[in-house]
Image 1 (cartoon, rainbow over the protein chains, first blue to last red):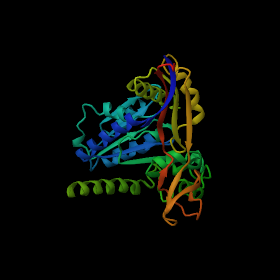
Image 2: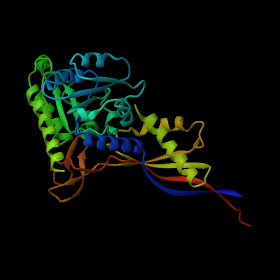
Image 3: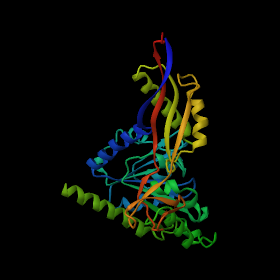
Image 4: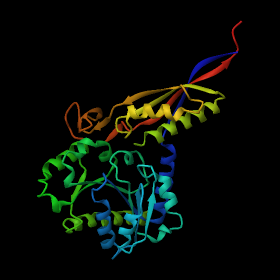
Length: 228
Length: 121
């Protein structure tokens, strides 16, 4: 007996497990009629601040909840809980991104049928989250004015995994000489046609337009459900 | 840096496939890696070696085929390369487009396995 090499075809997506879990989540979200928004950005771009402001304002008229991912600490969940909305922290340990299975287990015990919006704040990271579908309806990518206008050129992959871009901390724009035209141009270069919002969660500037996007999208979802 | 967990998934997948085909040994894994997969080739290669330790894939080779981004250009009505990943425009006519048809791949396409065969007389 001797051994001979043989080439066999496989054709399997390496992230198949995550994609299957994300598909199951998407179906579950659709059945529950909840609109799911995820947020990705580098650490310190203002995801938690934007979410804190959004939860506070949206929960006046809608039922909202949030999941927040971090490598360590419960700090963000504590901050978000000030909005009075249900919040759960996902501590990933050493994992640099959220995966669909983590969302699935974080949702255990929650009845999402009673929600209008579910927000998922990913771990601060502009690289790894791009590979993992979480079953969300809308993925936001945030860049703050302090990060530099060329962030989209440095991280085109994450901009291509997201649906809408949000430029944050506009209250600091003048201090850091932020060039809006250049930033907008760079976003359009890596993702032609991408919708871009600019806001300051601190001062509230631009928040209304952003919140309108969310309520319009929820309305679209609900009318699709009514027709189905 | 999620390349180690990706590498471990590749090794696990290759082991299962090899077992399913009744082979004990895998000598190479062929992978398609899209330019927009979010995975860095060099990091994946070094993580692959680590992920193979103490498995039956130890000593095997990861053969990576890099897949460039291809978009659908509405002006040309055809699949086209992009100018670059920093500029999503049709490389032929310059029309901006974000309709990606290729370049997100992260796929095990084939394995080279060792099969036991009778020696020729």
